[in-house]
Amino acid sequence: MKDITVMEDIQLLVNTFYEKVQADELLGPIFNGVIQDRWPVHLEKMYRFWQTVLLEEHTYFGRPFPPHAQLPIEQAHFDTWLRHWHETVDSLFAGPKAEEAKWRGGKMALMFMSKLDYYRNGTGTPLL
Image (cartoon, rainbow, N blue to C red; front, side, top):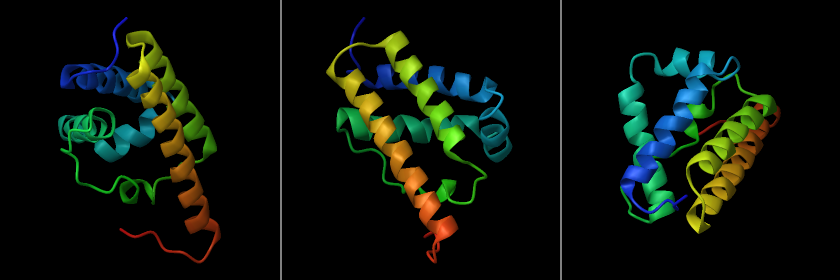
């Protein structure tokens, strides 16, 4: 298997991953309910996000946390998301960038869950 090196690799990774997410009994209803018929737009945004993160080609300029701040998601959702992410990466790629993708996915899940916990259980208000 090859490593993640070009935009086509990012697109394959993102498309394959979100096919699993859409079909997942825990994640699918949330993602499909929020995104509805805007999947092409969401996927394009995810291509740019991971292109920026993994290939260091700065095409994403958004803020990834705020859209998730009001979702009814818990640790089980992040665990499922991360399991699908790791399985997808491992099924398609091998190498330093593939390992980085898994590491960064784990860090992102941890950060999002920490922020959600802070906003739900503290006095903070999500910056939207």
